[in-house]
Image (cartoon, rainbow over the protein chains, first blue to last red):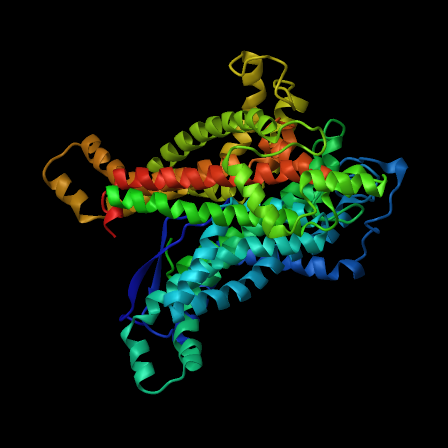
Length: 312
Length: 313
């Protein structure tokens, strides 16, 4: 750690739902993190083989997802009733075919587009909305804080899967509705983390000093608060992406997200479920993709956490 | 402490009101009229009559107040689809969900605590690494996928256990019912087990590095006595996490219940969503959220008992 003057603040993190909940998180605060801090973090991440490995796996997946339309893959939507449920390793179909004879490899790669989007997108939007809400509540304090945080508390009264299913179910099936539902699920936890770090920071001497020296609210937030909030929130958001991917696929799995014939891992898992007696191993592939992706995000979050010295 | 419990109890009221508002709002976010979805192409005057009898023609705030009033008196309305009382549907379904939730908690918590304690004590050894890796896998695993894996291995490949349903036995305590519960229980226990193991491990490691443990050792206490102290200190945190996980099992079992066609609240919810059966939908979400609120309340109170420091701040 390049700065020895930091103090540690305990942040309460009662995460909702299946979020890997930890009772508390030690967040280093007390100085606007210097550029050298981020350089240190970067070097520590580079030395962490697990994090690098997971980043490479995810990088490959993202590349394949983006390049899917131009890759030499069989059309993912072309059904061929003669080639139904071919086993893994069949000539021409490396990972076999699904219940309609569509190529699994191609569908898994095309499926990554929607599945990744439905995991990362909502968390990114929630990060923006929850970030603004949390900063507002934490920095202004008082009644604003009370109103924002009490509303957040109400959303905490739902397990995250239930809330996602309830919102998506009320809005009706469809990808957009699923995206909206998952975004709403993740706004409260991010608001809470940002609020609690901001509140801790606000009472620190260096913020008072900045205010006394005439810095505007905007510049205090930008230079002193944002830098300190970023680390813990980034770590937390990465965990949330892993949860979001599982929940998003889960929505499609029960028929609330993507709809046939779209290639999406959760939906594929659902349609292949009818075939577990005929081709048990092929039907596990989409779930395996969800598992690997979610696990990579989880491990990266672990790596970032230790590199940034944010401790759960 | 009494004061803390009282204030905590009082705080539950606004939360419960907020929850009821969200549940009510959710259902009315739904596009289209709840009745036309159910009744399809029928006479408009008949729909209007039905609408009036269900109270759907009144302004929303009034509908909310009426609904809240009837909910408060234990009246959840009748299913639009089957005409059955919502409360009746929910009671039998809730019993099934709670049975699975309790079994999965027992399994997940006992394995999780044991694994976490071992890993915490043997910090850095291969055992610790295996536990930590499995815990990360358990947290990341889509549990509905794990459910399918279990069905494939135990039902399809080995033919040992039934794949779906709850069996036809009249009692929940028969061997047949138990067989049907084994796979869903394992599938549901994965996440709580992994999370409890992670928490316990972190807690034990933190406590073992504290000075008071050193002092206990210096005084010549036996390892088992020291473990008692460690357990006592880890209890509040682990208890809180366990409570949250138990509440999650009750409210978040919809995906696993779908895989196993388990006749619990999750299946009721799933059915209600696709039938657009508004009273059932409202009732189920409300019941599950209230489970969650009450469980959290109980845990908070238990925590003040396990760790008196909690009530002081």
